[in-house]
Image 1 (cartoon, rainbow, N blue to C red):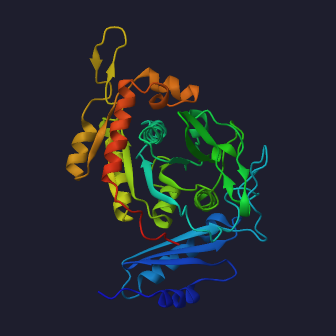
Image 2 (cartoon, rainbow, N blue to C red; image 1 turned 90 degrees about the vertical axis):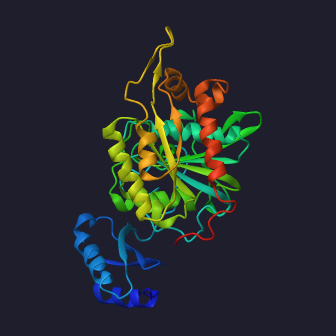
Amino acid sequence: MSFVQKEQVLEKLKEVLDPALGRVGGVSLTDGKVYVTIETDPDKGAALEPMRQAVEKSLSALPGVREVHAILTAERSPPPRLTVKQGAAPAKPGGGGFGGHKISSRPVAPLVRHMIAVASGKGGVGKSTVAANLAAAFVMLGKKTGLLDADIYGASQPVMMGLREKPQTGKNDMIIPPEKDMGGGKTLKLMSMGFFVEPTAPVIWRGPMVHSAIQQLLRDVQWGDLDVLIIDLPPGTGDAQLSLAQYVLLSGAVIVSTPQDVALREAEKGLRMFEKTNVPVLGMIENMSYHVCSHCNHREDIFGHGGARAAAARLNVPFLGEVPLQPVIRRQADAGMPVTIALPDHPVSESFRNIAARLWTSLPDIKPAAVKS
């Protein structure tokens, strides 16, 4: 099959794209799938949606095109640099800081060997807690590890890691991520939107701002030489997930769900999204799988049990393991030290280490060959 060429796409864009409203930020082609970013004025917002749809419709008519994804990205002129001084935080979308300027041309975390997205179909299933403890488990396994909190609206990793210091800037204005001391000379690098806003301040951004912020968190952060970067995604299948899947060659994604049917239905949607964007699904984790009473040792399946294992078998993806519902997990998260590090001999910690080990052995020996741009 003959796929469309980049020159054809650019010529078609000249016909349908009004230069007064937006300009081409980038074009990426993968086996007949076309990804186009359109740089726009963030103040115009939803008014530009018809133009985006027109671009997708026009490009879909080209011979050899299988799918088209057009994304609006926000830019202001002149573009301000990201500010990470003490107390810095954007007052509004595009008002400085994340999300309000053109993305740099830096490569995406070039020295990171593997990037793993941790996702869920719905909120409340403990995805961020799982991501934090998975990252800690990789540290325990001797891997150089980083944790990216890509949940722009609900950043929680600074609290769970007990870090509130503001990141500093280094050479070439690269952001230096704070590091969590994990004991034994081991550290975990962490970056989160939570470092740039006040703890109670909401982030009220439209999709283009989220798209821009996630790219910055990857491109403009000095991640350095890492074996694995765990990326904690927000729940659902929205802007953050799509931005990451389209612009980063992930080693794979992990889906977190509780055993109950309502969570599993949404988890399957998340899994299907990664499949459609050609991201390998490394497996499913059943969180809050069961509860064992600390007084009488009675086990109770509060949300059911085994649903994620059954779903993984039905969807033909690995089942990575189950994590019980235990108060110690919550206590350690609130205390700013994951249970996997604080209580390494606890059965919960063993569960996370086993899951991390299964993930590591399932990864390819080398990182993906290129980064989408």
